Image 1 (spheres, rainbow, N blue to C red):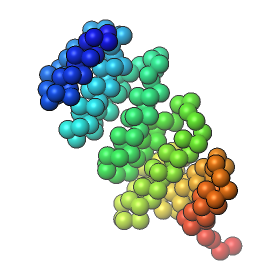
Image 2 (cartoon, rainbow, N blue to C red):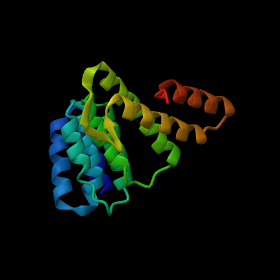
Image 3 (spheres, helix red, strand yellow):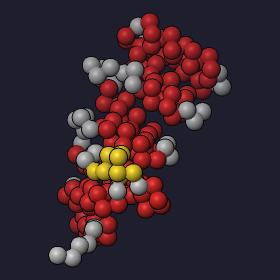
Image 4 (cartoon, rainbow, N blue to C red):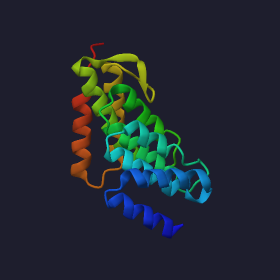
Length: 180
């Protein structure tokens, strides 16, 4: 397994991405032991050429029973969040980590990043309440509520008082103010 991976990795880094992609595909289809390494290789190649959808499909090859499943889902989430694919991609990014057992601070940090980007998209005129980001419809009030909660949760995991204050201030800055 390591020898095959090393050879294909050499092809990948040596400018033979098409050949490497073909070999990764064959490896993923022929031996369950190669699925995860081949999926990550395919994802790297496809992401490098700007094919986010193809990279996501490659990472989806990693089965839930694999030790690499959590890493594949996290990479999937990162690709979608950074893709510039708008609200649907951001919603898929959050869904990718929804049922994973990951560090709570990492989850909160990721939610802050994704909800911040979603709020920017919505404020630029891209609101679409039919899209849900976690529990929040893609509308400004709902995303403000979600982002505020994620920032406060992240503040609970802060390493220093200064970091906690900055996060709480940021939460207060996005907070939806209402008159009662």
